[in-house]
Image 1 (cartoon, one colour):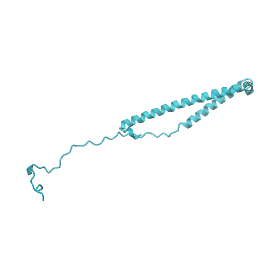
Image 2 (spheres, one colour):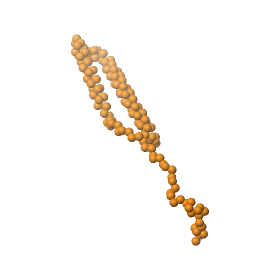
Image 3 (cartoon, helix red, strand yellow):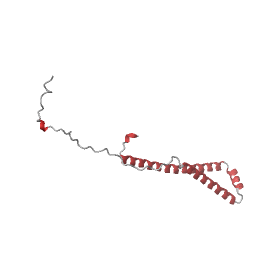
Image 4 (cartoon, helix red, strand yellow):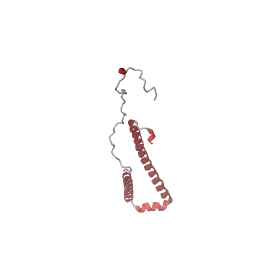
Length: 138
């Protein structure tokens, strides 16, 4: 046997404490703030409204042309004679005006949709910053 185990300790016996050592208190982990759930929005729910609006605009335009030609002296016959006389000029006029109108409408839809997406992006970034979530989750 070893002599080291039998040797008395260097401290006097009455100075040794029987209580466990006291550790410094540890703060509980900081939890993110509790946010109320957002109402769910179905993706693409605005698309039927846009299609209905486009159909209404087309219907109103058709009704307007019909009324204009009905008021004219000869009505549709005058329109058909003008098309026969000018031929391809009418085709290209209608094509130019129609595609320009569709381009304008599409531009408005893209601007509005993009603005909504940017707002959603900033809202998510604000929520992520408030909750202390790391950026590595993406």
